[in-house]
Image 1 (cartoon, rainbow, N blue to C red):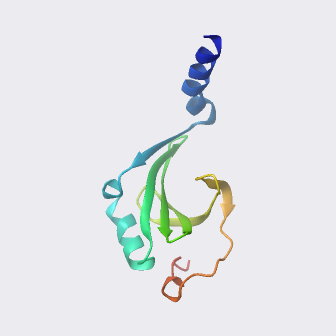
Image 2 (tube, helix red, strand yellow):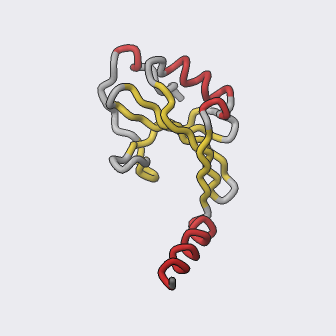
Length: 116
């Protein structure tokens, strides 16, 4: 019983301690600018999962895209503007704070990231 209470206590306080909440969204609930960007720039990839992340008041959208066995994560700001491509970890999450290393992609995906 003590372990159960401890687990519940940690589960409730984790978002407060780390200052981040992550809510899963349906692809249809993403901002139109996000889905338009994906449709234009990564046509053969499909949205596997999408999350709205609130990190200390800063809202971002993390979108996991798949194409066969290839998985990529794109991060968008609160307005749906592309921010960066992030590493996708082997345990179903992206590696925090790491930029993606260039990876070979099918020819139609060479322009997946806009130039700044």
